[in-house]
Length: 457
Image 1 (cartoon, rainbow, N blue to C red):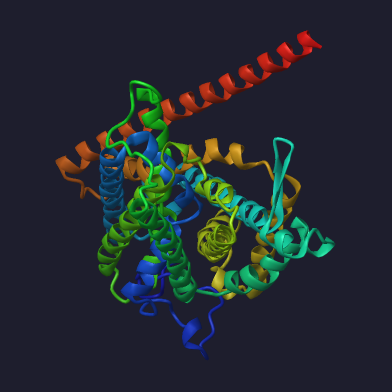
Image 2: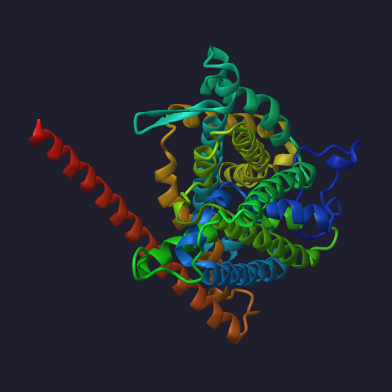
């Protein structure tokens, strides 16, 4: 939220250095293509593996319709943020909320960003550990790729492997000073997602040619498996898949023309829709009603042959590398918000290299420690994340429009803001209640089975 001496709202870069173009003022460094790669990478994270299960619940036609509807609503709320950023003096999401709601509004955004992004980073490390080192669930040991190749060794245990990935893959990337510096790694992460889609589509088309594809439903199966409330549980998954609002301001600040941000956003949304619908359609086509909430499980169950094992390892490794490259993009906005919260009265991070270094290392160490110590933290952040992402994507932008401190909202903007907020609150409440009810039923079923076994004994 620092202004330059000329009064412009340019964001001063991190680790500024006049001797290097990479460390000059960020304005003008980024191209539209670089912005597109970073936006797409922010959206296409771990949630891509849950899209086929979402399509199974909704059906093909409603699945695509809901994806398109959420993408349109995201585009609208992003436009809200961009318009108010242009009219105001703030260069961060938290600052934008502070202009409308004071320090409490800024704090609300910062807390949501910290919960969402830190949760995502921890989950990414847990998933990478599961892929490379395996895990144990339900008393069954699932070997990771490294353990399958080299056997169970001390050096391919979870703690050492994740530490290696953190130090030699993530650490160099999180120390890059600008969001635009991540454009190449973001492009590779999107390419890896496309590789996963290509493998899934090739397997689905081959299965179709051999007549072994599963039956797909065009509409929800209300008669047998799906209730109306189950449909609402898919919305937070898709909202999380399209949520990139936390990186709007860092990416926008580095474009030579801020007006290009709207263009980059629409291209990114179109690419993400194509990626999500492709993996949803072909994944559902390949595995049908047996599709799991994480499609990696389905690939793991179909790896009995040598070719199946090769495909399974390729999919898992490309997914792990994809998450490793998404990590620094999510970390960027997390670090920015924490610095803005803790050091609001300090000089900008660009002028304090030691603070930048210490904060970056502490965040990475904290993420690694939690991922190792509490590897089952997934469900905790699943509930919190579905709430905070909805706030960042819909509720906060709608609230800014309704507050209208700059007097630029039109009547249709306020009507749309009200509709977006109501939809976000209702769907989140129903989704959380349905998930809690499902978890409660699962525990009751386990308790019933346990009592039954004890009575027999």
